[in-house]
Image 1 (cartoon, helix red, strand yellow):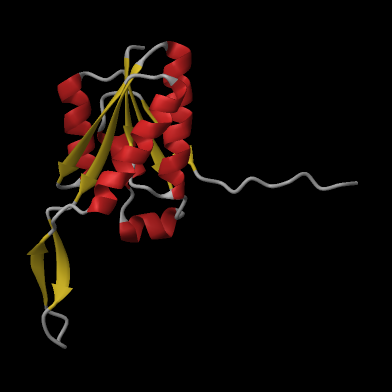
Image 2 (cartoon, one colour):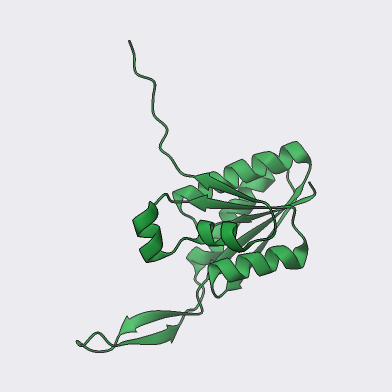
Length: 150
C-alpha cells in the first residue's frame, strides 16, 4: 500500500477515521491525501410556501481548519500527507479524486445514523462504498465505554 485517501469533515467519526488512517499509513509506510468536500451551494428559504433558493457556498476558515487538523495528526506521527479541498457532491468528488491520484485505499468515517436516517439523509460512507472501485474502509465513531467494575 503506497497511498491512502482519508475523507474528513471535522465530525467525531471523521476524527476517528483520521486517527486510524494515519496509524495504518504509518504501519504500511504509505502517504496520505486528506480530502474535505464542501458543497457548491446551500439552500435558503425564499418564502413561507416552502420555496428555496441556492446561494453559492464559500469555503470558510472552519473548512480549512478541518484539513489543518488532519495534517497535524499526520505530522505528529511523521507520515507524509497532502490535503485538498474539493467542491461538489461528496461521494462523486471523493471517488473521482481517489481515481485521479491512484490511491490504494479510501478511509471514511460513518456517523452511524442507521438505515432509515441514511435513506432519508443519504450517507457519504455508504455511497463511497457502493460506487468506488477501490477498497474502502469505513470507521464508525462509537463512544469508548469504560469497563464495569465487578
